[in-house]
Figure 1 (cartoon, rainbow, N blue to C red):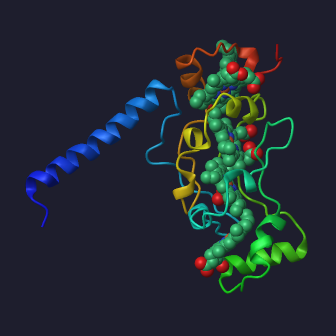
Figure 2 (cartoon, rainbow, N blue to C red):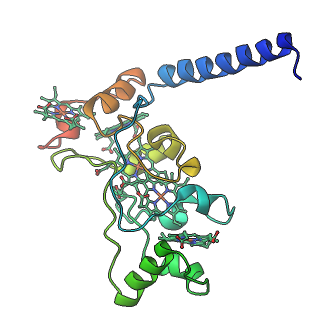
Length: 180
Ligand code: HEC
Ligand code: HEC
Ligand code: HEC
Ligand code: HEC
Ligand code: HEC
């Protein structure tokens, strides 16, 4: 039994940590957490970030390779998946579907979670170079079994809250054509 007094102190501390991280996120202008997030789109096969990152063998950028000029993070080539799964027994349904895509040699048609309209100019490169992390914008992906839109980063509010807080000068033409 945990004494009531300690239990309360523990709860108090936990509340304080949550509060402190919210305040910190605001001070840095990080995109707001959507609570509750919209439902996850149905994917062609059930891929879990948590299951794979828990292996301790993979970094985000092993799968999300950023080709020049650095606009998009892209989705992994099926060959990257097969570097492990080739030699693993495909017992479950998900692994069977993966093997079928690999055998047909066609890319897996992942459904987008975060997506900007194409009239918005966006680059991962400049933002990563400014020291902003994947988690800052996409939430704790490594803990997730299913990807959902957890933050408002793909909305104008999400962009502008951060730009205003960090005093990044942004004119209409920085994000929309014609680019100046
Ligand atoms: C570093 C090796 C590695 C890579 C790379 C890898 N996997 Fe896995 N994957 C695993 C391991 C290990 C498991 C867990 C197997 C278990 O617990 O039964 C797993 C489990 C899975 C499962 C769940 C098991 C099932 O049959 O339903 C799916 C689906 C899956 N992976 C898909 C993928 C996809 C898609 C990719 C590429 C985007 C990928 N994996 C890349 C090692 C890997
Ligand atoms: C083994 C390969 C693999 C690794 C490692 C990996 N991812 Fe992914 N990621 C995928 C696949 C496959 C999808 C598409 C399926 C989905 O949305 O869950 C995806 C989807 C995403 C998406 C949603 C993209 C969109 O808008 O549709 C984000 C964001 C993302 N990953 C971030 C990360 C971050 C951050 C890390 C590191 C913590 C990471 N990923 C590590 C394979 C990987
Ligand atoms: C400053 C915020 C921000 C940061 C930092 C960020 N992303 Fe994104 N990410 C976005 C936005 C916004 C989109 C939607 C872009 C679009 O639709 O063109 C996106 C889209 C994606 C996608 C979908 C596919 C693609 O090519 O666009 C993946 C995968 C992804 N991000 C992974 C990552 C990973 C991995 C990291 C860390 C290395 C990361 N992101 C860091 C904001 C961010
Ligand atoms: C968490 C903070 C943050 C968020 C969210 C963010 N930005 Fe930025 N953005 C920055 C910073 C910091 C810079 C300045 C980088 C530099 O000095 O080069 C920047 C620079 C830019 C630039 C100029 C550099 C370039 O790539 O041409 C554009 C355009 C831009 N952001 C668009 C966007 C859009 C569109 C969104 C939303 C989809 C967005 N940003 C979301 C912090 C953010
Ligand atoms: C930091 C980037 C950024 C800047 C600066 C920016 N926008 Fe946007 N804008 C976006 C994004 C992202 C969207 C699409 C997502 C959304 O609508 O939330 C958008 C959507 C729009 C739309 C279509 C949707 C709507 O709200 O009707 C219009 C029109 C627009 N912007 C006009 C402007 C004008 C005018 C300015 C200058 C006063 C401006 N934008 C400055 C990022 C930006």
